[in-house]
Image 1 (cartoon, rainbow, N blue to C red):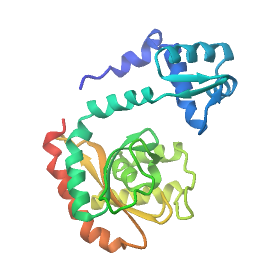
Image 2 (image 1 turned 90 degrees about the vertical axis):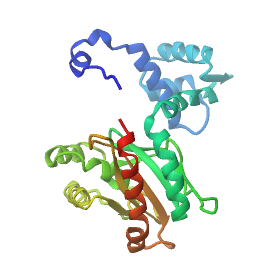
Image 3 (image 1 turned 45 degrees about the horizontal axis):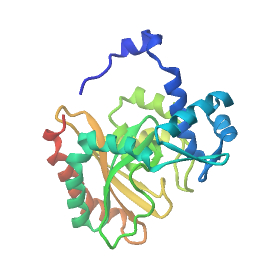
Length: 261
């Protein structure tokens, strides 16, 4: 996949489209509320002048991404075309979905694929046997990378110095009573996971759930994602996850390495 040169991105400030950046910021801030928002609330959340926010909303409405009723604005289902474009164009989801389906069927548990997005992990594919309750994780679901098994599996690719710097830079707010937030302890856990080739996180990311993950490598050994199996703590022990689920995940990740470019 062709990439923009980093030097060009940094040196040519005129290439930055501020109006597009403002529009994206405004779109993202719809997530701050679970209900339609007023122009003033959106402008305040996106830190934009009210007149600027109004022009952006008018443009988004004309393009079908936003609807308005009275003084309130809401996103429309048309926004999902942006996510659909990513999923359809992403090789990972195409290649890994059959693998997740096979793993989930054999394990009779939820299996997911995640990628890193700065300090978070984002789940971009999943498979679940019919009998299993999903537990809230779905496509597009985000969690902090430092306290998730998929995140730690991917962060292990960084050098020790890079990893230490990244952990100190990222927010490390506890999301459950079991979440480890101390950067030195998280660093030690990720280094241990790197050495053994998998990560197992017990109730640090979600209450009552534990998860085991392995990194997904492309053909040149670069880690580009991670796949996992998650289960309720009352149903599956950590020893059983390692014994039953780890071989399935390792086999699945290895089976696609040569297909990922």
